[in-house]
Image 1 (cartoon, rainbow, N blue to C red):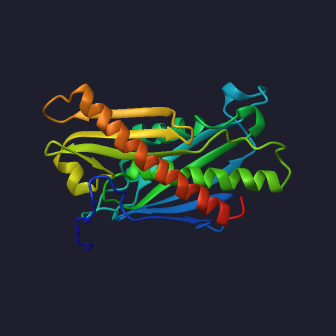
Image 2: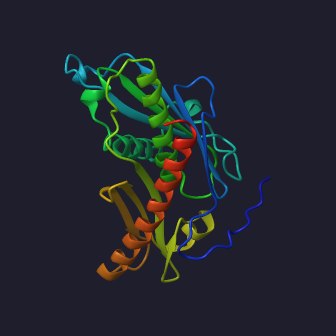
Image 3: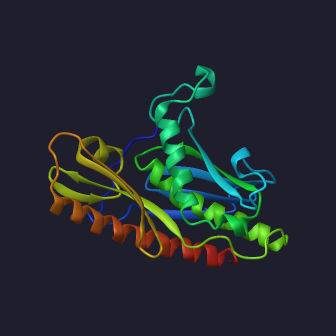
Length: 244
């Protein structure tokens, strides 16, 4: 059983981050992201079809699916397929991932095809949804590069980078990139999704007990912005190494 060891880091630091491109040999694009003890395998698959509402539009589509392996946590979680339906948390997270990635895609340039991003959590220690978004962008970029190399698209369809991170108030103090222990004790839990140009795609913030102030919100936004800039710098570095 994996023992949890709290990360010794400053409140404004990210957990140790690695992005492993082309982690899956069969997907058109893939990335294994590790943030602290959280690990998510993100795979991008290209399908030469689009949903009905996009047919004959000349535009493509990007969507996402999310799941957690049964032993990604300390105790086994029953597979959702065995239950016969997805949990509401799973549906909410995969919709967030899809929205986040669609925010930086030019569907005209993608052409009438769909890129599906499968984000499977191998190991969960907080921040699985934000790690999924950050890793999925790398997988998406690699899939777009595959399409470009195969001459299936003429122009680069990604308008910007996108990454996500969690922030929160723990015992009244701001904290960046919460692991499970910090998240479980947080007074305020928030997820930020931002582009490389510093524009927000989504802000999810909830007070667990006491409401938070406007000044606290601004502190958390500033802290999250700092973290996302660092994540995007690493995305750029890894994609450059991968030949993009």
